[in-house]
Image 1 (cartoon, rainbow, N blue to C red):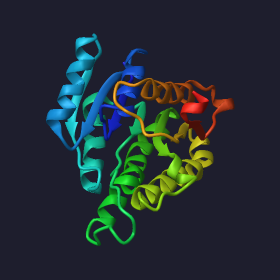
Image 2: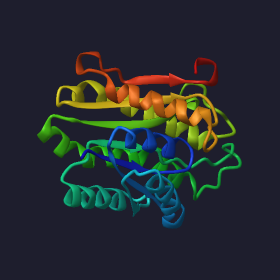
Image 3: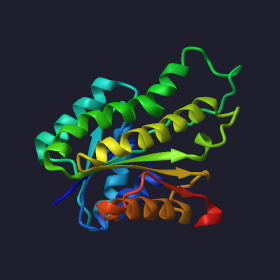
Length: 220
């Protein structure tokens, strides 16, 4: 059974994407900071007959992210798909952003993704197989002064996907992002559409791999 690891699993795009892969027979590992909330998501999936486990991770802490990947690989042998969905959704302009939170926001919004990609890459390279999927955002293309740290983070996610795409493709690893130009609510058609975009990227034959898909309500 293939393993799908969601870092930053939440009730919106994270849950919908995990469920989309579960429908294709993947074992799900849902990881986030709040174990109780993550456990509720896992129970919903298990009630539908899917295999789902819960882990706790602090996406802002490199050691926590690396340890999570190592533990999942030790238990299940491989991570076939990594989905990095963690984000600090702070609404704050530069003047409003507390000085002591900026680095923490960026650690979640992009730092954790870098660490997670670096952690899963070696075993994926050994197998010449695997996917690293990143939840991007429209703020990467049109930054918002009111969501400045999130905008910087999503620009970083897009740069990470585009920057790793070619070198990782040569190793058999598909790195891709869905740039989501919308606020997505839990249990919504929008969340399902984003999940479908992720599944489409994963399902592409290697010769047709792409690094980015765009989602907006108008394109759904």
